[in-house]
Length: 129
Image 1 (cartoon, rainbow, N blue to C red):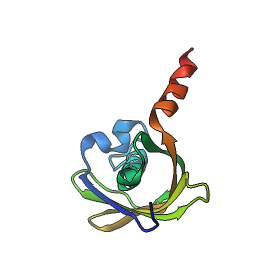
Image 2 (cartoon, rainbow, N blue to C red):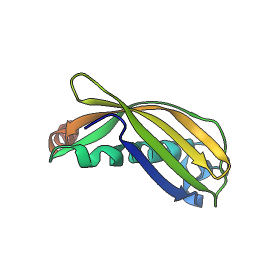
Image 3 (spheres, helix red, strand yellow):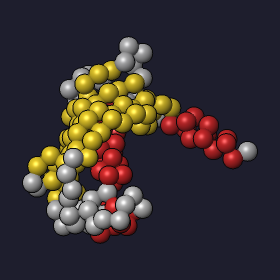
Image 4 (cartoon, rainbow, N blue to C red):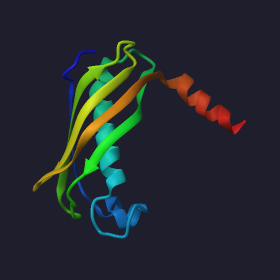
């Protein structure tokens, strides 16, 4: 895996992605948690082809501002770029941004950790007893 890996994803904002319908507010605009999910998914998908078999990434940190509202019906796209790999090779830092058809709606940084998928899921399930 090398620095500079880029991700891109596009979607159209639908009613089910609005703040008033996902529990993050009462307004009929694209919900911040859905923007975050789009950013995380784009970053994860961008590096997936470079991971060893059985490995995946999980989000560990976000520092993202949501700077403009987007109504239902508009297209949104996400751009991510891998800008740092920790010395241990396990923590990836991305520069991230989200845009609608009118311009920038969100930007910041996002970190993901490389984990062994089965072990990670088993550890989470072990909390059930």
